[in-house]
Image (cartoon, rainbow, N blue to C red):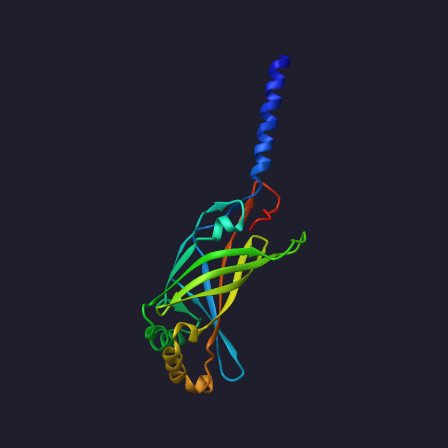
Length: 210
């Protein structure tokens, strides 16, 4: 009886140690939301939009930290499928802006992720995502700031359309919307992506190595 009890105790200790070593398991879905905000008029009024056809290929659906989940993840975006909440504006953007860039897709891949400093309990986690973005035949590395809070992961960065040789497309949409834009369409665009990340088998205690 004593030997049996000791054996059960040893098994329980090993199982507990294994769980402690594993720590949190982070889980993400296989979809992602990709949005942008462009700017018009000398007052730099923002116009928000969303890509409605995004193929997301995650590096992993589960991992111990953000690095395992996201580094290596990629998206392929169909630029003909967008929404800004205004069908007429959507048609103009597709015809006079995205339609002038080739191919009609944007591809991006996450190549790095770093957390920013020590996390304070009860506050959102923050850091930087580095993405390689290919648009209009040009590839650029873009840093994006991320915030993780209450299961929501959101990253935001800025691109310069001139870096992607999109001067012609920018001039085209500015001409098509000249009156509405008061002659000014800006070359910097805010880009964002968001998804959900659930932490299981632990309290929200993501591994330090992100």
